[in-house]
Amino acid sequence: MVILLGALAAIFGPGLVGYQGASNGAEPSPSSAKPAPTQLTEYRNDQAGIALSYPSTWAQLRAKDPQVLLVASEGTEGTFQLRAVQLPTVVNQQQLPAAKQLTDQIVGANKTAQMLTEPKQITLGGLPGYWYLYTFKDESSGQEGAHSHFFIFKDKTMLSFVFESIPSSKFKDTAPNFDQIAASFHVLQK
Image 1 (cartoon, rainbow, N blue to C red):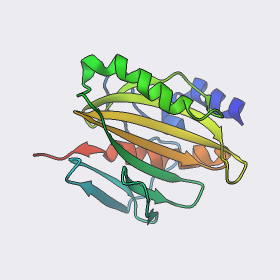
Image 2 (tube, helix red, strand yellow):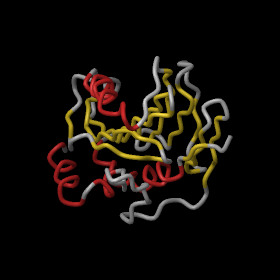
Image 3 (cartoon, helix red, strand yellow):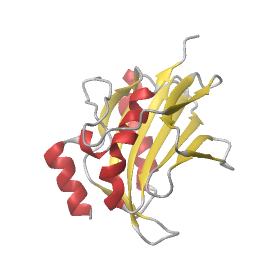
Image 4 (tube, rainbow, N blue to C red):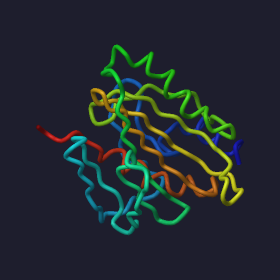
């Protein structure tokens, strides 16, 4: 499966595998691989100053970790998690190369992670960050899963978006939903 997802990433680019953006600062747009749902639920977090929308058919799950702001799922085939981590210093475009050391460490902490493409510097919702695409071994099921993982920096907050499919063979089918969620992300006006 790693070979299949890697081939898809190389041939079709990131739009087909969960991210339709570019390192030039372009905002993501929904993938055309499969129509995304039209009914969405908006999630807003005034404290973090952000909002996004996810498919209304997805269940919102409770997380015990206070850093996890949102978990939404359509079962194991498609799950989305949003985490906010407070950093000691502001990260903006100038500090982004140094912040990549942190994002590399976070992804690398999963010893089963197999990168499908090089991390890409992106802009999402007007904020700088990095995007990673990799497979991993799910501990609970033993299956190979796939992650489209965003790290976005908003002042002293690192927002981590993890789009997950288990098994990884379902990732192509869930990519349009993931693209739609990413495209809906925005910073709330003060």
